[in-house]
Length: 360
Image 1 (cartoon, helix red, strand yellow):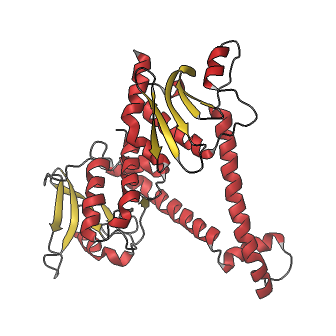
Image 2: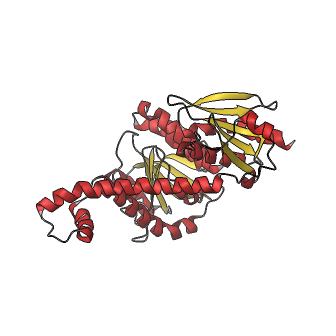
Image 3: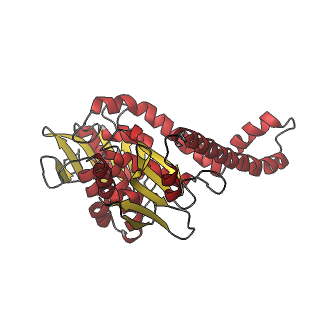
């Protein structure tokens, strides 16, 4: 599996099992150990790579333990402290990480509840863990822009210097993004005052604050919606193939009901599903060979923009249920119900087999 697929598969597992994982030990077994093993690529059963219940005496503190230590060349590289999955992570949860960080060679500390992973280093002072994480990975809602940095911490691509070099930028960008999200949801007075001052000439009185607070909140929500629509429009323009009527067999078009026009609406979910299928299929062929065609009844994903080379179909038009259609060597379609877009990754093997069948 590709690295992004591994993260996505674990994200799906977390979303499906989070409600049933109530204790710290359950979070370790269900989420944290698979994260260390499948995402980071370390052998959780080899003490040369992963030491559970890592112990080191720290001053007057004797026998304290950190849940996991990731080892490389007999040196501690990462420390991981776990909490229960339904608990909120706070810096107060990281007291053991603070102490261990200063007495080991570790430059990366991770505080997690199995769903959220907070990554810390020592940007503010050498050998002293920062009070704020430089990267926060939420498996309940994965920010794919973080995956290249996360990959640098994997066993096969471990690049500590590169991570540390990028940590400061990540730290502040992440903090700003979280602040923006908070202000968009519940704007503070200073935030409201800032925008009101750009459009309103009067004094920022209590009445003005009460008037502009919901206006700023609504404007922020509308702005985000507009940005989504712009991205959707651009995606449609760049991914919709420019059809050449002379090169498309009319019988094929009729057979597949791929006539574009009134009644065909490409949705954001279909485009997201297309990107997932494309990411999977790219392990077999170049991405330029993966094309899409929308129709009234389904969204087709094709090899070489040839509807005689189907890779998958997205049946997303029904309101109640969504299906992924996959194909065998004889081009027979099998529909698989989907609870979320991410579940497409569960059928990655069938998608790859469909691509390979067209290459033979």
